[in-house]
Picture 1: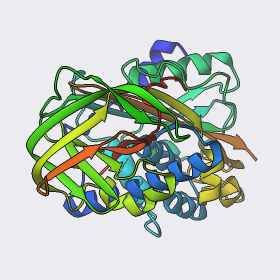
Picture 2: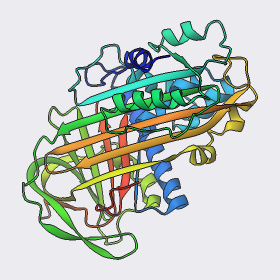
Picture 3: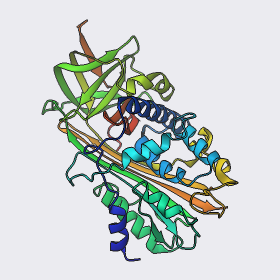
Picture 4: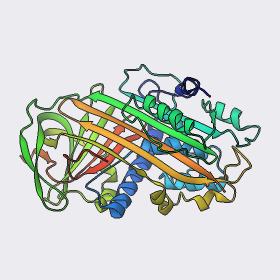
Length: 393
């Protein structure tokens, strides 16, 4: 299949959440709770496993890719995926995330947020008769590829590059093989509602290992931003222009910074709950980071394990024995005085066999952030930043 044909077929699902939002406020709140819990779990477990200074994950693109895969999963597989994604016993949870990532109206190319989902089946996989019509009911038009061949790498990478507006050019380094690859991707670019000061003088920042570096520290003194604080943490919910999106930044009052184990206690903070307008002052490092990993080992520990879906496989797609093998995710974020750029892509790969009144938020040690769509509840990106100067994967 020519590259242009694949891209044309898959690009039909490139959508923006800003132009059409599914569900009501209750659905949005439930979605955000699941996404914040998922972010906390992923970051905490990844930090414990890797000990990295910086970790960025995209709960939204992960939920989209796994939500798409779950459409064909067995009842047992659907339950495992829903639980692993933070929806508990709500088996339809991943499907609602998928719907939020595939709204009915396509967006303009320059919309703040664009999202995309796609599924590519191996040309040797025998699909069940209802598979294509079932996917069509979810506005998904699958593609057929030789997933053991090198052209599948070029085509899937081309789709990811297009879906992320060039921010993530590559997600696969080799043919994925297996039965199918489900994909979720997003691209975000927006300006702050209130820009930071133009000058960002160098200020000290304490790394997780206790060493200190000098970083460009952005500053904003404002009356009316939304803040939350207690004896351990201070936070601000920074709005972007248009106020459809916001970024929560949580800083620790102590010099030790925010730890992975703190995140579960901070899930309501990451959701933007209990923030109130106040007079405040914000110090936030300018940073630009890329991250990427196979999330499958972490998801295995969280219950989305191949063995949980292996016996029954994905009967909604095929009678063949298919199980989850890898969940590759790449993310990027750039935060400066004017606004934020972010992108994420997730590929789910299968295998055959599955002043007392002045609140100061000073992020001068490892801090947490969560970039969210305030209408749908999707968490576009979340992470811990322990070294703002470390930009590579």
